[in-house]
Every structure is written in structure tokens, then in C-alpha cells.
Length: 316
Ligand SMILES: Cc1cc2nc3c(=O)[nH]c(=O)nc-3n(C[C@H](O)[C@H](O)[C@H](O)COP(=O)(O)OP(=O)(O)OC[C@H]3O[C@@H](n4cnc5c(N)ncnc54)[C@H](O)[C@@H]3O)c2cc1C
Ligand code: FES
Image (cartoon, rainbow, N blue to C red; front, side):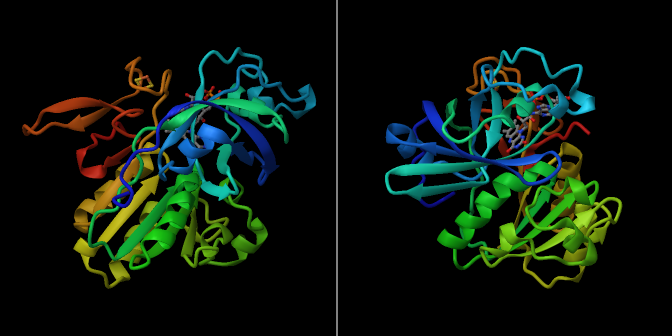
């Protein structure tokens, strides 16, 4: 962000689990509490930054609670920390509370579901570069695909608190209604075309839902929903910015829509990460170089995960 530019000092901290609430079939919201130096470090975490969680000693759920599709991989050892960004950062007395919205996709995120109040988690962070707010913007469009909703919820909060001149609007998409990682009741979402998701409405932000199969909200890709909305909107391109987080194919489409509409756009990229601090070189993102036709590799964990969409060579 442009205000308060001093980056939060990163380190290895122990966080205490405050809550770990299931909000959908495969979605959970984990609330972590930091105290002391950790509280200071994470109080300064910017939307889009992330942390590496050590889940190697976290217990597996009981066999009956392991989804069939993870039966073969669930028992794998968790050698590497896993990266997660934040859906909210809040202060409470001298503590910092950090929320992670997560989806169960493999052995580490499966183990996360067994964390309960009072457990400790080792965390490295805050890491990477978050979203930036260029001077003079008056409208911000947040475009989330699936789990990309987490960091954009944090951004929504910061934009409304620190940038009152910027009007914010959110778009949230998923393949189908049950893949929307929101606490709102999905049957309610399904009944409505446009729906104000509570996670954004709490900041006074209007939101539009899109699902690929039409089971909730607008029928189609969230990027197409954005494109159609832009076709009908009256806004000044140079005053507008798009922030997007989600699967790379969606980010590529959003970047293309931004380019055609001459709107600035920042995308939060995902890569498999080993170290998270720029040492192992496992998280390369191909980017355009200054010379035409040439590309360079940047590191998602250190140079990103947020990039200007014009510089990324999307791999889809
Ligand atoms: C900067 C950053 C922020 C993230 N924030 C969140 C978040 O807020 N919430 C959330 O649920 N997830 C987030 N992720 C993704 C999360 O790190 C992975 O889902 C997690 O590592 C899964 O661990 P696992 O052991 O459960 O599954 P794994 O066995 O590690 O992965 C399961 C499947 O997902 C694929 N996968 C895992 N990680 C990635 C990745 N980074 N990019 C592409 N494919 C991947 C694997 O190839 C595999 O097919 C983030 C990733 C990055 C890089
Ligand atoms: S994860 Fe090691 S360099 Fe990025």
C-alpha cells in the first residue's frame, strides 16, 4: 500500500490458535493469535502478503473424516512449510489476530482441520509483497476466484478504512455454489442473481457472485461477469484499478480484460513454494523483460506474490 510503506519485520513466530471454524464442505477459517514481537510483525502485514506455516506435527483427522480423494496422500510426511495469505488482520489489546481462509486440498491443509483453540503453530512471516494502491485511484474492483477471496477480504477492509475516496466493488466466482468460500448460506445465494456477500458487505462493499454452472449468482466465469459489468459501467479507466486473486487461468483472463479496458491491474500469483524467502528458486514466475520479446524469471515469494498484470507471462 502507499501509506505506511515501511514493511513489517519478518521472523519465525509461534501463534496460538483462537478458533478453526468450518464454513463449507472443504473450507475453514483459522484464527491465529500473536503476542509480543509476533504481534508487532503481523500487525503490519499488508493484504496479499503471506506466511509459511509448519504443519509437520499437526495431527491427522480420524480415518472416517479423511475425504476419499485424499485417502492415498493424507499420510504423507509434511516436510515443507505451506504458504497461506490472510483474510483479516485485527488488533486486540496487545495481541494481533490473523485469519486464514483455507481449503482442504492435500495432506497439510487436511491436518490444519484438526487445529483447535490453544494449539501452537510455528509461522514464518509476513512474507512477500502485497497489493499496492497507486495515487489517484477512485474505484477498485476486487475479482476473486475460489480461495482467492481470502486476501481480497483483507484488502477490502484496508481500502475502506484507509482510502475512503476509493469506491470498492467485489466479484467472487467459483465452479459451483458449494465451492464459494463464504459464510453466507448458499441456498440464499442460489436464489439471487446479484448477492451482497457478508464478508464484503460488512465494509459497505457491494459484491457480485458468479458460478461456472449457474448454481449461484451470475451463470458463467467470474472474468466474463467482470467484462460484462465493465461494458455497462461508466467509469474512468485511469481512475480505476483491478485487484485479482485466484487460479492462474482466471488471472490471465482478468489481465486481458484489464488490458483491453486500459485499467491498471494487480494479480496475486501462486506457485509451489519450498522456502518462501527467495533462497530455493522453486517459485519462478515468467515476466516480461524491458527488451521486447525477452522474458526474465522473478520469484513469487520475494518479488510477488502480487505482480502488475502487464509484466506477467501467464503459463495457461
Ligand atoms: C502466496 C500463496 C498464498 C496462498 N494462500 C492460500 C490461502 O489463503 N488459502 C488456501 O487455502 N490456500 C492458499 N495457498 C495455497 C496453499 O499453499 C496450498 O493449497 C497448500 O500448500 C496445500 O498444501 P497441502 O499439503 O494441503 O496440499 P498439497 O499436496 O501441497 O497440494 C495439493 C494440490 O494442490 C496443488 N498446489 C498446492 N500448492 C499450490 C500452489 N501454490 N500453486 C499451485 N498448485 C498448488 C498441488 O500441486 C496438489 O495438486 C496459497 C499459496 C501461495 C503460494
Ligand atoms: S519459495 Fe524458495 S525462492 Fe521462492
